[in-house]
Length: 144
Image (spheres, rainbow, N blue to C red):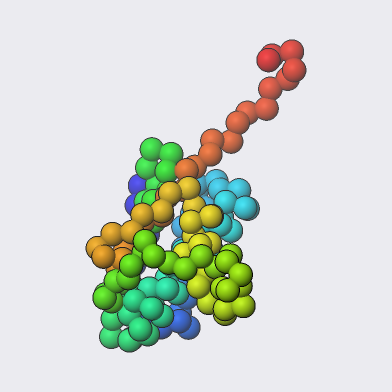
């Protein structure tokens, strides 16, 4: 089922409203608080990167966000209209020489918080997957 498909202008000020709408549409999935936080933070990082680095905050360019839940997976794609980037050579923010930098943690965070991350279209797009956990029914010890 398609949860959201939205084109947003490359303006950082609209991200909070977009994230509120986005997380409300995830409610039927029954994500835990932690899962919802991880997905929301990953989407925020991907959208900020798309606006700031991909589209260089050009408000005439758009970022497209699509989210779909299917077969136990939440798949989210974020695509910008920029030049792309070399996603295979992103600096590791945990190395000593990168610790004091004020940026450069978004890709790292997304990879840690989501279950699977792929880039496509020369780095203009990111596909993030979160496996949806089935909430197990508690059983009595004697039933086990």
